[in-house]
Image (cartoon, rainbow, N blue to C red):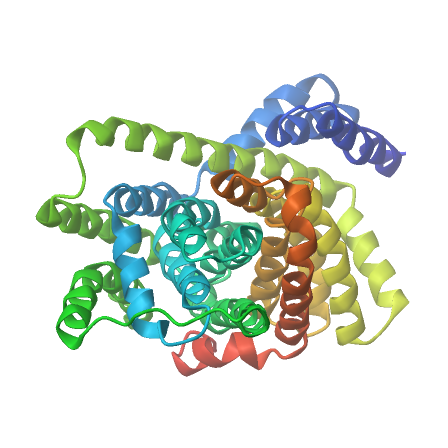
Amino acid sequence: MLTTSVIVYLLIMTPILLVLGVPIGTSICLGSTLSIFSIMGPTAPLNAANRIFAGMNSFALLAIPFFVLAGNIMNTGGIAAKLINLAKVCIGFIPGALMHTNIVANMLFGAISGSGVAAAAAIGSVVLPGEAKEGYDTKLSAVVNIASAPAGMIIPPSNIFIIYSLASGGVSVAALFVAGYIPGIMWGLAVIGVAAFYSWRMGYKTSIVPGWGLRAKIILEAIPAIFLIVLIIGGIISGFFTPTEASCVAVVYAAIVSACSRTLPLKKIPGMLLDTAKTTGLIVFLIGVSAILGWVLAYAKLPNMIAQALLNFSDSSSVILLGMMVIMLVVGCVMDPAPAVLIFTPIFLPVAIKLGISPIHFGVMMVFNLSLGAITPPVGPILFTGCRIARKSIDEVFLKMLPFFGALIITLILVTLIPALSMALPTWAGLVH
């Protein structure tokens, strides 16, 4: 009876609310609260409020607003153009250089800002007009910008990894950050491979590589932005500061760099702070309501039931992981990565642990998997942002995205089935024992 009521209120009502256009956080909260009401009766609202507060009451969560703020400072400070120039210097000799510049710049900018949406908007708005002037297919240019932007969600620092750490019960954020490097770079290389094929087939040229003097100037201008990544990850790996402390260091460093370069107008600071507050509020609220969801699922023993069903289906870890991968690919099409991580980590992680799979490897696989959803209709925030920047409809670009999806899914399978791709660096850094 208990499981039936949870299924009715949570697993049926919540999707109905989402279809009706109710925000995902509110839908989860209402469905979970009604489920608690079926369990506890009139005390349900108080218990729900307590669960929300407990979910939000985490020191590790402080890292999210500070990383968001640091990214916004760098975004507003005109760092996109510097990273684009650096990417041109690095790969301008490759045919179709502007498309490859877009990819590399998205990887760098996404890693600094922690946001694939911000990367697609900032880099795309600068690179796409230049590609159009040089005769590139504007639809293909839009697709390359969209397909490469999520790499920054995997390359650290990444807010999604922080959220996964909370949902998993405390997996090391430092280990997750370091584990994301190889898969994140593989994402970028997969997109570069498809873009290189298109460039060869369409006869695109290389870019004019600047002289050594200008190259040196471009590299020097980009070093402060790149050093932010080195500072944060180096400090965490060395144990000099925690990820939460690293987020504060990132804000101070970004503010100093912007002040010294005089690229952050004072009039933009209020809007930047407001955007940070909105983004943080949304993420933290989702974490809070997901705490209710997690409690209800655990009380009804649904994760155990699902875990047993998966284990009965097959005793092969590879088969079960691939099954989870397919489920999360479907989920990613209709749900943003953050709530999907919060909802499905408590369900799937216990199964992975029973199979002897490292929570770090599973977390990287999950984030990589759900990042694909960010460029997939009908939700796909990066897809919609990239189309808006390029002034294209989804119908115009979707067919050209299929080869990129194919390359990224092959990469996902490799990341899923080869744990060393995720585990080698954190093991070498001494973060896995």
